[in-house]
Amino acid sequence: MLYAKYHFYSEVNVMKEHHYPALNDHQILHSTLINDLNNKMTSIHLGLSQAGDVERFLIEWFTGHTANEDAKFGKFLAEKTGTQGAGGE
Ligand SMILES: [Fe+2]
Image (cartoon, rainbow, N blue to C red; front, top):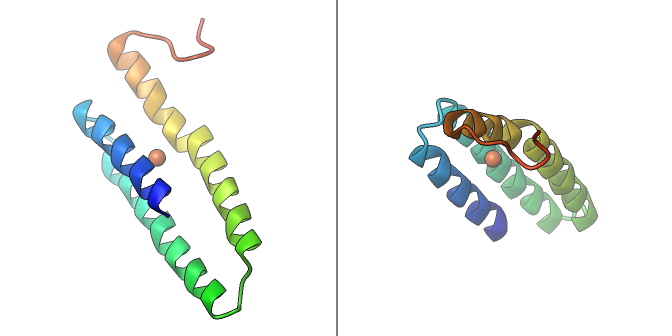
């Protein structure tokens, strides 16, 4: 949980610095994940879920979020700064 919060805090700061127009929507996605994680942690404590379920959820979330939402910011930043990201031509 702490890593997710740190990652989000760092990412949002860079987005603010570059005036990313979709910042609010992106922050909502982050907040939703934190809420979902809190619910899942409660579920584990109540014996309704297992840690492996949360681990799979997190891996899928980060994989999808990075590939889709964070990639949008990467594209925005590359266009703004006139640079290519990794794998660019
Ligand atoms: Fe993000």
